[in-house]
Length: 259
Ligand code: F6R
Image (cartoon, rainbow, N blue to C red; front, side, top):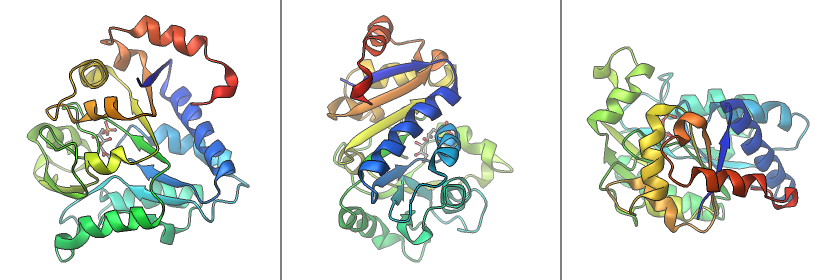
């Protein structure tokens, strides 16, 4: 089962996950990171910045989870822009080694399979950072997504477009389509780290970890993965039935085990 860690604040989650990424890069200087966007991973990227100062990250690779289709890559909310602004530049990564799916209309027919080939050529993703949508999506795998799915175009649900309207001038500006790593793609990453903060995520987190494994709740796919770490604040953890057990397990965990 997933290891569930309940933290007091987002900053604690950021520090915990950033420490794990630093250990990974020390072990594997050419580590391959799976990069989420949105609000959730920000504390991880912020905590990484001071920790990676002075570390050679020139061989680290990164693959974003998803991208909007048809949005100008230069738009500040394209995930290409977000990854450049929040990850590549502050962490000093090599831009040529960090990929974002190609959401341009010109390349869209082949973009998914190309992305899969690129991930395979890099040796697969070592650590995949994940957020979770209020509708239970991971990446932009909306309810109903196949557990075997590969990187492909999806249509965003009305709920996701409403949730993401805060990044745009109006909801009408939120793209309707995206290209996202599939649930099958995410399943091949060697370590999944799912983060969630706030009461608005509590139902999705509980359903993902303790509900039935179902395509209707795409994040429930993490129950089928051998190495999952879930880092949540008290509000996002509030609907978990095994909460006391998760706390005991974490409290008793030997330091040497890592995440
Ligand atoms: C982002 C992504 C999405 C988000 C999710 C939560 O790359 O794939 O699954 O992680 O929509 O978004 P936030 O973190 O903004 O609440």
